[in-house]
Amino acid sequence: MSPNKASAVSLEGVSKAYGRVKALDRLTFDVAEGQFFALFGPSSVGKTTTMRTISGLVIPDTGRVALHGVDATHAPIKSRGVSMVFQSFALYPHLTVYENFAYPLREANVARPEIDKRVKETAEMLKLAHRLERKPNTLSGGEQQRVALGRSLIRRPNILLLDEPLTNLDAKLRHDMRAELKRLHRQFGMTIIYATPDELEALSMGEVIAVMRDGAVVQKGSPDELYDQPNDVYVAAKIGAPHMNLLEATVGESGEALKTGFGSFELARKIKAKAGDKVVMGVRPADLEIASGQAVQLSAPVQLLEPLGDVTIVSLGEKTDNLRILLPESRASEIKLGDRLPIKVDARKIHVFRVEDGIALR
Image 1: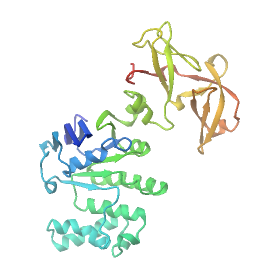
Image 2 (image 1 turned 120 degrees about the horizontal axis):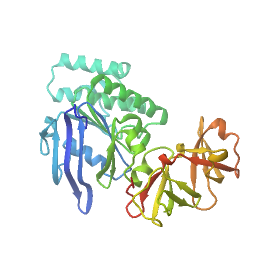
Image 3 (image 1 turned 60 degrees about the vertical axis):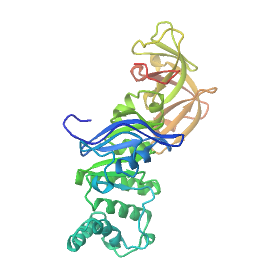
Image 4 (image 1 turned 135 degrees about the vertical axis):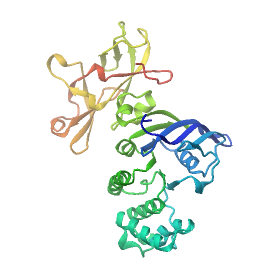
């Protein structure tokens, strides 16, 4: 957390179980005031339970939830200053867009003129002014998502929770809504916690990202920190597209080289391991280069070409091991299946992980 910003949300040792299933396991993290914070991980790691615990919909079995420095573990939902947007939108189908916006204000006994003013301001901001008299089922997916957002924003919450809000939208709408959410964050300066299984959403939106596994946070940091310094194989494999190459390797005699099925790779520093130890070597596809002359470290045949527009993923290998390299399309267009490519890698870009627990060896 930034030393200059107070904590908006703090979870300390929060656990929650449903029978034998442990949804949260001593979960601990802090979110600074005004931060766009991403909770990232695949399905069933505890993201939704975390969000519901912050909002007050779930009471933890153990641990503490604090909002703006005040213990809110057992606080009523209405007093938390928290609003949540669900993956399913959760709109009232029998009410118009205007009534969907107005409903939470009526529940809070806001005066009618103020309700009308805030509904129209919110609709204008979200480009829904021409849809106020429509019912949700007559709107597009993107419009329904904006209505769900507007219904939360109109309450002017201190903390906005977004639980996989773009999952039901197509790729173009997801892109547009990512930009819209970032704009709204800048405009209002509110604290946003965004849960997603999509690494592109997490990396492009989160100022700070918490990577979750089995109900706990395994690493928290900026997108650059998670990409450049993953704490373990799990984070290394989840962050970055295409994902990091992970190869079985053996530590060389000097402790400054790794032997793999592709050949030996020199390391920039000696690692905490003995000669002959089995490790996992990681290298990003973008950190591999086509070599020439004295720089060639090894060569391997092309197995697969995956054009992605301006770049192409080139997969190399002869047996079970696979090594992916990311190349500009202009360079990849000259390559054919079966070609042997000479490659090299900057020794400073190589990651090494223990086999037994996947922890990074610094």
